[in-house]
Every structure is written in C-alpha cells, then in structure tokens.
Length: 267
Image (cartoon, rainbow, N blue to C red; front, side):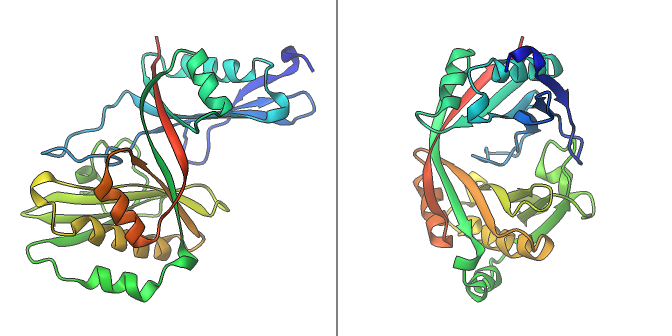
C-alpha cells in the first residue's frame, strides 16, 4: 500500500497529551507517536531542587513492523515537529533496534545509556514493604501526593496542592520544610497494568540515610493503594549509578535489557 493513503491523525489522550496515529484507509493504526513531559526527578537531584526545563519532552514513536520502510515514522516525526517547534525531544531505544537506526538517520544525538528494569508486585512481600516504610527517620517527614502534574515544574509545586484523582503518585521526604528526597510513578489509561517510575533522587547533603529506600518503599505501597490495577513498575537506571542499582535490586527490580538515550532539538 502506498504512503499516500495513510493519514496522520492527531488523537490527544484523556489527559490532553499530544498523540498522533498513522491510519491506513481500512482504519488500521500502522504507527503511533506521543509526547509527554520529562519528569524533573528521574535521574539526579541537584544541590537544590530546580525547575524542569520547560522545553524538554519525551517522544514515544512506534511503527508496526509490517508497515515499516514506507516513510510512516518520518511523517509521524514531522507531525511532532510541527507541534513542538523549538522544543528538545528525548528518546530511549534498545541497542540494535529499528528505533535506534531511525534516530540516527533523523539527526538525534546520543547522550547516554542505562538499564531497563521491572518490578512485579506478586514478587514483593507487602509486609516487608510496610516494615521499610515504618522505619523511623528522625527529623524527616514522609508525604504523598496523587494527581496529574499538568504544568508543574517541581515536586514542591505538586505538594502545595491537595491530592486528587490522577495518573501520578509521589512519595517525598521533607526536612525543615523542604523536599530532600522523592520518587514518582505514572500510570497509563486503563486497562494498562504497568506504571513507570522516576527516581528516587536524594539531595546531596541527605544521602547515606536510606531515604531513597524509604520513599521508594512508600511509593510502592501507595501506588498499589491508589491504582490497584497496576501489576508492574518499569524504570530506567543510568550507567554508573551503582547505588541506585543496589537500591532497586534490594526492592526486587530485575533487569530487562539495555537502553540508549538520544536527544533532538527541533528547529
């Protein structure tokens, strides 16, 4: 089938997240693309909490194998580019995948790599998680927040507002009125059973006190309470972060494979 009978259609999801479908004339979805904000707590907490770069978005783009090599991925990327002029896109791919070749052909620049990891709730002893949450951390207070982080640029902004129904769950540790550790997970639309975790991240001066383990155990417990349909949590760990790898292995995350991170600044 020729490319000319494939339409690129904008289809925002229930949260208003920009999405596009490549639809063939019989109504088959041959490919999809979507954008979402890059969370500010996915990798490293600096010496003071800072706002998320407002121009950075995470791109997810996929074309069904039988529809590849017809220019569909390029057309989806063009639709994204027309929507997000001047923005910075982040993409994660597997080594040797078609997505990696696509990124390199379209001018994306490699900026890092890491591991893709998964935790399954049925493999976690929930009483043990409760014990981790109940451990006292003098001088620190545990806080939770649930909702949709639309427009928020820091976890402090989220915690200023009351919780409400939404796709995101945050667990944070505070000391002297400021956030010193946090972790976030986001869920997809039902019936998706997998959430994505960002962090935990801990402020430099508060490391070595097991705060990352504390807030992550709290998040796993809270996420299960708020979104009981979620059965798995996926996450990424950048190369060289041995402490975060050890924390996640302790909680039960298992490695699934390697990921490469690319970026592209749209004209």
